[in-house]
Amino acid sequence: MNSKGHRKNILTDKWDSQGIGVYIDGRSVYVTQEFCDEW
Image 1 (spheres, rainbow, N blue to C red):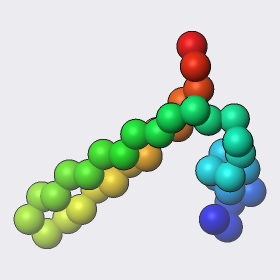
Image 2 (image 1 turned 135 degrees about the horizontal axis):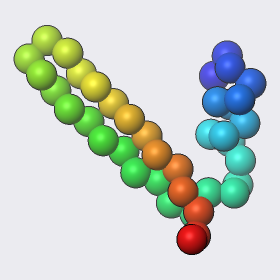
Image 3 (image 1 turned 135 degrees about the vertical axis):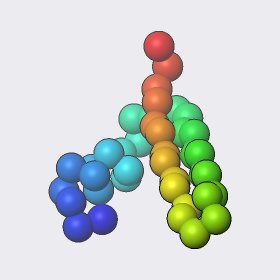
């Protein structure tokens, strides 16, 4: 949340939906979060 751009995107009310993906590979964890609005 130290990045102004990331903070703005996360806290905006523009997004209708979000998706989260998690992949665990033994010793590593990878996480992604996607935000979207209506097409």
